[in-house]
Length: 286
Ligand code: SF4
Ligand code: SF4
Image (cartoon, rainbow, N blue to C red):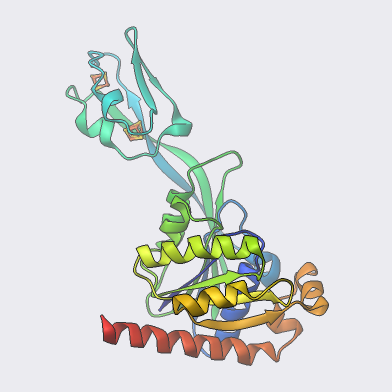
């Protein structure tokens, strides 16, 4: 089972929820936590696992054999990302813009394009007991998050429970991380910003046809508009984590909620049971 933990907005407590859910479940199940927030993976700030395996992630970028090239311009025409240009008898390649889609090499009529790897990030792995952490890390200044996320997801073992810590926002990296999930847990906070981004995140989940539910973090800080929105939209609010100085203090010290306040473990196990029930019900109605 794959459960994505997402939020339209950064800083809502998504990683707090993902790590506490993973730790609670790992008492009884084999769990893989995938940190796909590759621009700023921070699950391990809470988990403190030794990440003893690491491998680079490459994307294939074109290299032109000038001896074969006729400067016909077809490669520049097919590139949807403006990563290749043909000017005055020269082919220019802009590696930072290249998505490694392979269209230019496939369509070059002279077979003048080969591909070479460009490193865009790394995948690191480690674990303890029933819990394995796989985290992607994008190189500084790099914009190509989806290839790193795809590489992280290659380590999914379907026999395990998979928790995915999704990047914030609603753009391509989010889609890449969330797609193929069985459930999307949306973490929000009861503020106007939180609600605005929750609405966008719900649209993403619906577009991908993934059942979703909401966790309201810092409950009590704002108003009840997120609650009312969920009620109107028929989206279950599965857990509320109160605005509590002790919880904030644990987080600031890098201590997972369920370790600092073990009674929360029961709430996360109940949350997981609710998620399983919703997934089962959604499969019946499909
Ligand atoms: S498509 Fe091939 S032959 Fe044409 S300009 Fe590009 S590299 Fe050269
Ligand atoms: S591999 Fe794709 S993105 Fe990169 S230059 Fe070629 S067509 Fe453009």
